[in-house]
Length: 369
Image 1 (spheres, rainbow, N blue to C red):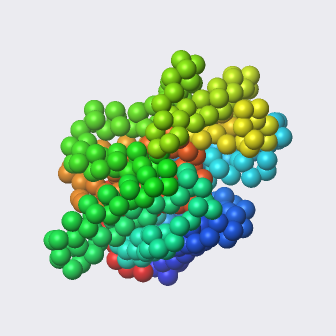
Image 2: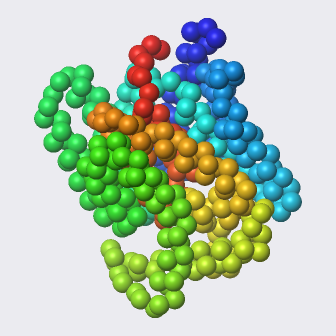
Image 3: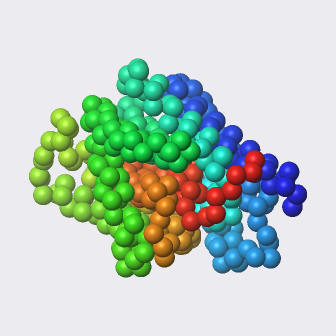
């Protein structure tokens, strides 16, 4: 493959990230229009980038088979249960992105651009209140800007050799938590707090198989166990207010209904056209549970296999992680933590951000573009 063709994948990736992050967080009306075909655009773009960068002879057959099966089984499930047509693209996108994370080059110039764009959007949100996005999405927006900003600051620190930027790192983290609190975005605020803890422990985790596995299992299967715990908590009648809202936000009823319905259709899942009885719209509020209950246990197993494979590759580096990798790994698990309460990392634009963080880790940095 010629260098010019390979560079095309960098332009596709850079353009895709900038388009989705800017169009999603400038105004809610624009976001509503641009997300209509987001999953289809992402699938086409990542299929093209993977085809450009992959060497078919060296391609791992099991992983490639998992991606193909995810697309096929999702399509079959869609036909069997009459799900919305775009539903099959959510797990298909996720599977393809997790597969592509092994092949798309970690280009330092592209990384600086996309992280810089993600960081600059914070000023738009700091200057004007954006209540139209709602509590939860506003929190995820601030979390996005923080994760991009932390990595961009590290690039600036390395280029300019300004040691005092480490204080800006800390200030950005604290200010983001405060904004999440002001917007009553509890899950985002807690995820940002966790980010600080993860940043501290990552050097030890990256050289420990036990700690790496613990983090991976808790952030994936632990997400499902958390929904079961939340349902049981709701049945106890305990009611505690955090940021003027009950800790029992209604998700316990949603998850209880979804688990009950899923057990009737474990293979195909319940589909995205299912009419909720406990809530006025169909919203799962948990990334891993969404893949399981909507698409069934087969699709869930395939996507989870790819997710765990990539997380292991990116978490256990068998060496001390660089500062950029440290920030990126902490960011990856911050998104997984946020997805205990939101769909988060499995849907655009957050899936692109999740991929961008994965792409920062464990590869030799390149500089041509």
